[in-house]
Image (cartoon, rainbow, N blue to C red; front, side, top):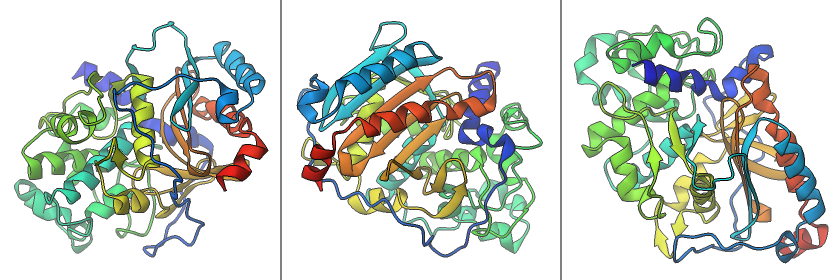
Length: 376
């Protein structure tokens, strides 16, 4: 359990940065904010599972600007940085010099869980996101002690609007120790009181992600990792991951995943491909579009929140990203066919999670204006 807690300390993701922020209220209606729709102009294939390597100029990017960004990153706590455009790696850096090193992605784990929920729906294991979660947890029927708690759905867990008391960013000082030190994480989460009506207030809640992992296990009969190996990681030729277990053998749904940066980039490219990989449908386009659309206001520094994905704009370009504590980013810029992976160890202060955003913004700007016009 100590090992699991060490992962959990890193799970505070975006939330940890919000020491100076307050959570934003969200309506139960769909957000009216501009949706970064994924209208990808091309589908990238990697028949042998390996990324092609090219130069920035080959894909319309400024090599001098990219090199300047990489140099600055090398002098910081960035552990790796990877830039993929049009399905080609045009720049990559690894502090240890090893592209095959598995690095912690922290709460980007949540975005992977979102994809797996979509796949479970596609495969018929789940009817949809409107299902109340009470039906999946009959062993905790006494915990569903109010009409509000009985009305929590899968969608509320995905959008972090369940209303459950989960002071991850406040009382718990951005740590999950109150949950991870218990013998039954699901019971701990479900026994929390209701602070708000489901669907009314956004509150960062890794507990909700854990319940999603449990729902995957309960409906598929497989742990999240085994389900992912069959339907997501395997088809993408991602063969080396570490994913800690939970007490119910569901895996940690919101934190703890480790993988190679090049493999994490495949997850991003799959989303840009609208769920297709090497001609095979991995997850439905409908799920990709819905999960990467805003369903709450999120918070001021990061942008809107979808179903375990964040949305914002860099230099006028809509971006979709997963984010983890200490500076882990999987950023997708659909209209530029751009994927950026950053792994970091910015852990001196929770606000340091924000630091890689400056590099990501500059890499977006490094796409030439002529190339942008060609893509539009």
